Length: 185
Image 1: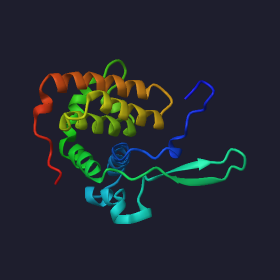
Image 2: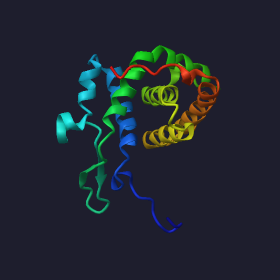
Image 3: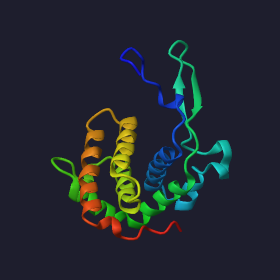
Image 4: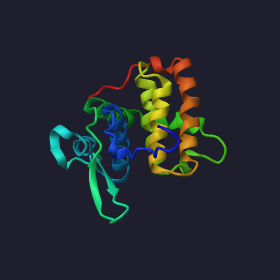
């Protein structure tokens, strides 16, 4: 891409299945936090093989700048196994994840002050750092910072970057990643 080339909108580039799983996991975690639904019921809404085109989180709305018409554009299919592991893993270890996140926050950021979407991003990112040592820390951090940028234009992406970077150093170098990952159930 040159300086004269506009960036490609997310919806024009089919997402990597693992990236889609991360996005859908954050959406599912948010849904679980604001409802009384069971984990499996929420997961079913995001699994393509279960609901075909009816699944949530699989499309972006693009607006035609000339006409204002909106079109749904498919973002691609998630890695279903990763999606399930992320959501169930966060649910199983939420208290531990929140303690780690709370300890890594600085300045005016507190766990209670975090918006729910930011908390879901951090929970999923920290769980992945703990449970998937085979995925480089830089990849995990970049993925969740990019998701934060999709949701926020303010300081949140930088905070997500700082917290995940701080925790990656702690959990990966400190040996916490050696703990067995939660079951995929």
